[in-house]
Image (cartoon, rainbow, N blue to C red; front, side, top):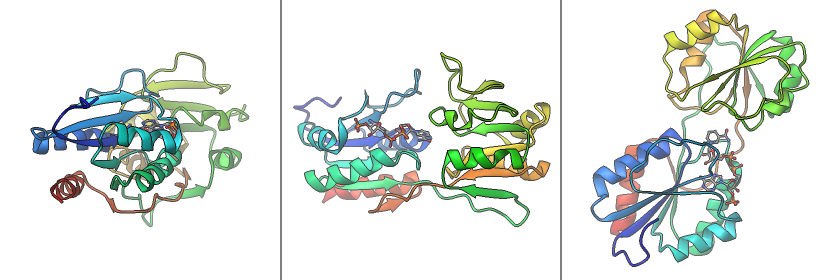
Length: 257
Ligand code: NAP
């Protein structure tokens, strides 16, 4: 955490994504001499990647707790660089910014756009996707993260290859599965090899967007596989950029004003 008596300005990044890590690195390189950088993590990952600057971990206690944190730690600007599916923390960031007056930027991820030769099927929730999944295949590559896997638990006749950042410490709520641990980015070759070796016949993905995990979609297209895609929640409102360089510019401008 930034020292309370530091004369430097303080930037808080709400993180847990590759973009947040890249932003911390870019801010450190560009403004590190005059800015304290803190990245906030929810604490879902046991061994998060190394980050420059300060790292704090765990919830703030809702929007009110985050607003208090901003004030108590003399935060000058807030960047919400969380995952597009992390809707609660993004809503809290918007509310805390409004209450505290600390300017907020959203560092978003560009949406994936299906091509004419893609075979994507969209669903609003993991539960709806799970209900429909047996229509598309029997051996699914499940790439939705750890939190909502239970939605697929009723599918006793399906086999799952589950990709997670870290190996789980307790069994997953699935009947028949194998875990493959790994943090992106992955190449199209790696993805195609994995899906071929495991005889995957359907890919399940959140519509997360961005480049780091898009290769699985290219591989699915190459292999002619259907993709069951879970739609994003509504994007947070307010100023939004889609690349780290633009976020650095925004922070620099805000600190100058
Ligand atoms: P969420 O549902 O929006 O947030 C639930 C609660 O977790 C928040 O209200 C907040 O607790 C706490 N929290 C979330 N992100 C935080 C952060 N960066 N720093 C401090 N507290 C945080 O979020 P989620 O979907 O569980 O995602 C948690 C984290 O994992 C996020 O940082 C996100 O960027 C990352 N992530 C999520 C996904 C995904 O698919 N959802 C995928 C990849 C990475 P309080 O209300 O107590 O402050």
